[in-house]
Amino acid sequence: KQWYQRRVRGLKGVKRENVDKVLEAIDCVWKEVSENGVDEEQVAAVLHQIEISKKHQSTMFGLHLGVGLLNAWLHGSRPAEYLELNTHIKRFKEEESTTG
Image (cartoon, rainbow, N blue to C red; front, side):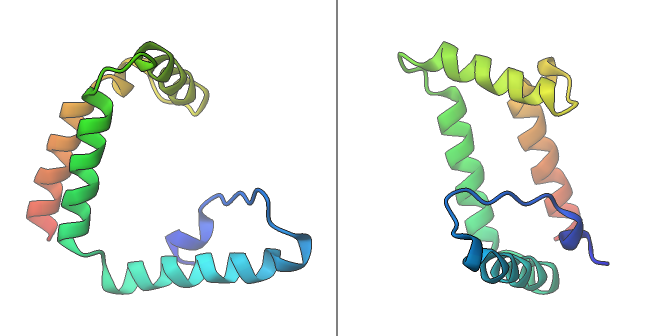
C-alpha cells in the first residue's frame, strides 16, 4: 500500500450514503499528489500563511496557543516542539530545496 492510503481520515457532516464517494475522492487526491507532487508556489503560500497566523497575536492568541499545545501533546509530540515554529519551517524549506 502507498503511504497516502495509511493516513487517518475523519468525516464530519457527511451522509452515510456518501462516505465511500468522499473516501474515494480523498484517495484520488493523495494518489495524484504522490505521483505529481505539489506546486512550489502553493507550498510557499501555505508556509507564509502558517507563519503569519502563528505569529499574529490576537485577543484569542493564548487560547489558540493552549489548544495547539494540547493537540500536540495528545498526538504524541512534545508540547515544546509546537512552539518551535521557525525551526520546523526552516527545516522544511531546507529539505524541500535539497529534494525538490
